[in-house]
Length: 212
Image 1: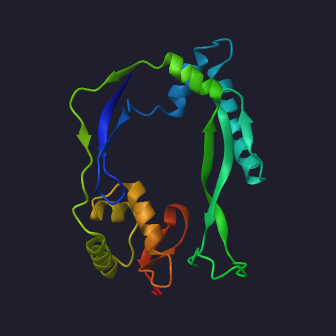
Image 2: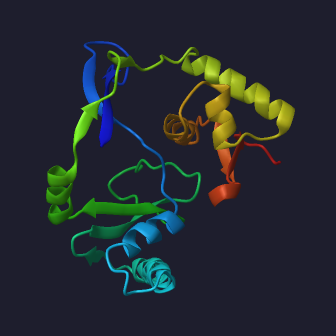
């Protein structure tokens, strides 16, 4: 049985009417081995090693097809496609109608996933929801203003040379998602406070104009 809680959320500016929405209380995350064991229980005639190999091959083939520009639809599961983003520190705004935004570097940001109607129907039929005990959960307001977060970040970079996404989130009492969105904003425009170095798991942020 899945559980949910009611979460209170203000608008983006933290003002105005507060809305309440249901949020899933995650049981825990299953790893591949556990998922293979559960999948194997549907057809024990197929060895677990074969099930595990098929899942691995699906991941490899899916990656290769997406890398070639295909979208992939798996019946009863959903449709997968690439999500792209700029991989440079140039402005994302056009300078005018004639701006062709030449010499831009683009990279893979993520994978888009759209669940199939069949999967949604299955979930609605199978899922039994129970409310978690307690009242309405309230999101913690950030204890620092944007200016304070920038100041704290600059001090951190002056001391350590750079800051990672997780360090920014911890330093400023934010979730990784909110920190990622804010860091992206802080690297855009002519008056950008920060700039990025590296990519992927090695991506860090330094002060704009830094030669480090």
